[in-house]
Image (cartoon, rainbow, N blue to C red; front, side, top):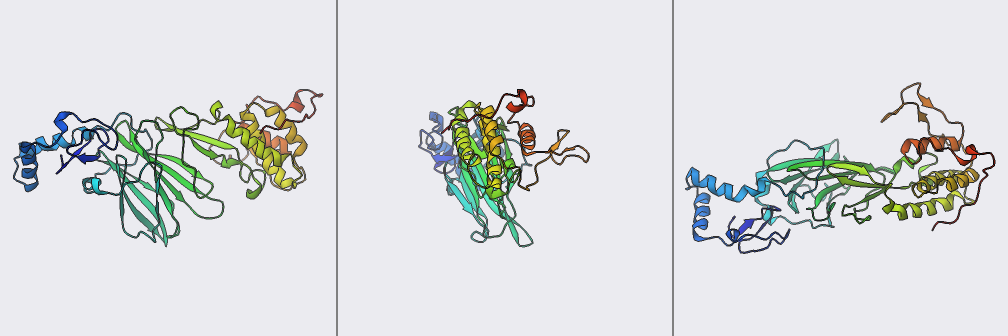
Length: 390
């Protein structure tokens, strides 16, 4: 108990001492956790006055904090923990901090908030400060729960840029997690996305990487399996076969499961997303637009078609539609599997747009390694029209 409040052993929030059900997580308190008795109130007063004995102090501290040392078993699991540090001063004022509810966000900008900002989000306490470097400012979000703390640092940007901190539900029935979206600024770039939450009793961080644009859509359970889906787009397609403004990109769907980021785009539950992408990119790929625009749309068209079992048909349409006369430098392949740049001497220089597109899609996993285009399988297999897949 703290004054006329008590701590919830499930979510670590403080509620009124007389409460029978926690208003944050729905936990039902036992009778022993009800209103403070005269004797327990006397113990707290003695402790606050510094007159309690060492034994009594240990007993009261254990009674208040023992359950808080073991976070709830259904808490979200994330990875890549940063070193933990105690922030007891922040935890002590948690009941009075303004709350960030699930589904809402808190926009932070250095020029509007020069001092530290304190917030509460589910079972977490947040301290938002800044790091400066040659006139640029990055948000620093310290997340605290169960006597543990991790820090997420955003992108260095102009002090007027806003960075979003939001409460997102990534798994049904679990506490929310803290999501930091930090926009780096610049043309056609990039929002760095990080999550902070509890993993098997440890407060950790998972990095979703950087994505084109000023923000990403909030995750929602599109597939209906109880896990929130981050519906993004595959930025590898941008600039690959055309300029940015003419590049189409297929959807990319990520889940955070057991502390890992998993690409679940192949799940049939997302078929509608890829049919819509196929329709939009296919209309431009097959249109009378200039060659650069068609060449920028056809890769997303074929990639999306491969996700819904229409690869052969879309490939035939691409062969009819692409423009071989454009001077855009085609992407290269690599004879060895690498995470970054291909080592010197291992590059593959493709001779045509279809050849480069096939290598590109195979490298990204949209097309099986052993798949061969229809025109290479049998001489009589000519291009055939593909039905509109709205």
